[in-house]
Image (cartoon, rainbow, N blue to C red):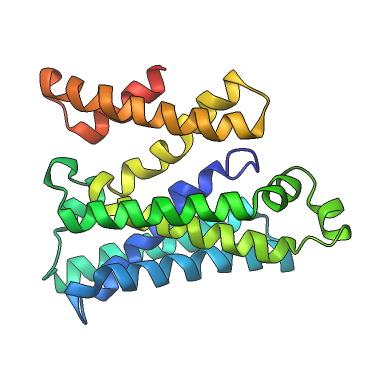
Amino acid sequence: IVLRGMSYIGHGLSHSIFGGFAAMQLFAAQFYAIGAGLWGIASALAITTVSKRSRVDADAAIGVITIASFAFGVALFAKFGTSGPRFENALFGSILGISVGQIFGLTAISILTAIFVLLRYRALLFSSFDPEVAAASGVKVGRIEAALMVVLSLAILATLTVIGVTLVAALLVIPAVIARMLTNSFGKMLAFSTLIGTLCGFIGMYASYFADVPSGTMIVLVGALM
């Protein structure tokens, strides 16, 4: 995402998924994750389609689609309330209140992401740096981008009620940016960003206790400082 110059999409999709999170509350609150996930994937694919088939750039498409979804979610919460996770939990997250089910969900998404990156490593690398030549060489660039958006949406969904809409984009981007400043190797960047993200979480959680600051916020501040 960082190498493709799409850092803002993490912020945008987190807002977009919030719209599905709110909409699902009206029908079956216990299945909010399914609704939010489908909404996020649809938004991601819509952004990709609009930016490729119209005169609208990707950043403009992200702005319109994702902010509209977020506003829709806020309107639904204001009008109908919620019978599931609280509005504040979705907006700001609650790391200290993470459930066993959420841990399993995070683990499953992490494994899925790792498998996707390993199996499609060369195609991802090629399409990230030179999509036109990649397409001419037989790489299904459109499919790769769609799959990447689906995995990204699932990753954001898994962390939505843990980190919250307002912080998930920072944790998606900051470790990768730090890693990019340390190496020119794509493979090393993947490894470094994972380790840096873990380190930020470890330090941020302990620092938040002594500083009496919300854990998610402190983790982001530690990453920004690094």
